[in-house]
Length: 611
Ligand code: ADP
Ligand code: ZN
Image 1 (cartoon, rainbow, N blue to C red):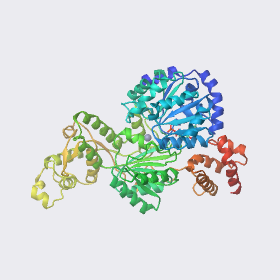
Image 2 (image 1 turned 180 degrees about the vertical axis):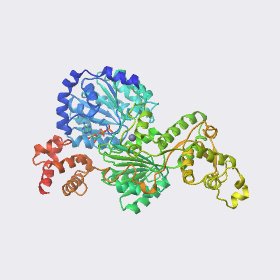
Image 3 (image 1 turned 30 degrees about the vertical axis):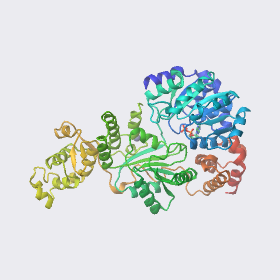
């Protein structure tokens, strides 16, 4: 990481050239998007692009990557060719660009206006042309490109070009030969997920100089991380939905669980809750997805088949009903919350069984993959068990050096009680060992607390030295200790439901390895880390705000676009509190550009006047 950071600073344009180049860009930024200024590393990327320098921008979801090519595209001579892997993603971008008055078109198998698009391109009437990577290798496409000047090649989801990335797409390899034919056109590669290895590979594959790398921090400060033990998922998720109005995604591990949770939550909350998984008919899946994108309060319960290519900015929570596959997957999935910058929640409900299943699966993997997957599981176990800042742990995982606390995760907001559970762990492990490593938690608990039954007597377990050695408050801690030991692999669930020793168990038994656990919160304290009102800054019950939302819904219906394409919640909030009285005053609000002012300004002013 350090090497790359150095490269970034070393090659950043000097202060003066940033100012020179970007004055005009800031003007256009205000005019087109209505934004007061660039955010984070956007300025650095836009400055390079406008200077004609090829660039790889690694920026987290929600950082505003699309603006870094849309704005230069509207300013530079010629058309910007955008390569994007998914049609849904392209159409989403198209709507947003057009809503801001940028001349954009897509050339995909789902479009019928090919001829018109090609003509528009030839006539130099497009700022942006979106295409899929497959098209890049077609001679006819290359011929088309020679017909009119190109301003920039923008390659979205650029990690797809690398075999090291998690989503290799061979078609991305065809981009280099195409771009090499237009050698003087700058390239801008964009991705949210690329480790060091992948970054170097993207630079190499796309012919971008090493100094062209710009990396933004991974932090998503508006997302609040919450990791809780799963005791009653439907109750816990119902509570989350009550605390967090607005759209949400709940990830569940299997199709059956998806259906089950969706049914129960719909019944319990009366809200629009729909399932999404690969077992549903494609047209049903598409319909559920479209409804979700357009909705202001729907909850989608889904397998991980859902999410890629969904740019919905107003997702207020992402919950995991079981542990995700890895920290990388967790970060990508939770990253879908709060792209608009408003507060959002990431809630993970974990159970020891999730780790047990995952560790069992390790055994079925080919030898060479086991070690890597074991490390991924250990990292996840650390995340769920840590009494320290979750965000800090996540960012360290991605090679950053974050502050020790963030103030916006469950552990920072309500620092948990950490207890030394070394002795209790030794007792539990030794009970498992002495009973032959074939009994489940319930049996071990009875043995340790000295509650005899027929099965215990029959096996002679009441005569073991561990019988009845745990009492009082410790007895209540046995279950969390067992869960913690299972999460870190010191206790492993066997196929027949027993618990066997594994991993660090011998070291713990010998007293060489201490075990600390977080004292589980009392049941009534389910508010931990998520309080009502925390997750929405929207003024609940404000008649003007409600009326503005209603108007936004009407306009969205008329224009056949999702409401967020009209204005984000933050813009409506500003309208409700500042009550602009003229188009000029309205234009001053962050997020109101010239095109939207013209299209919707009068109607919003009218609505404000009437309330
Ligand atoms: P990414 O592609 O990096 O995930 P997007 O391009 O979808 O992010 O942008 C995320 C959100 O941030 C969008 O809703 C966009 O309108 C908003 N945004 C982008 N740049 C700015 C800015 N400079 N000021 C305010 N909002 C911005
Ligand atoms: Zn924190």
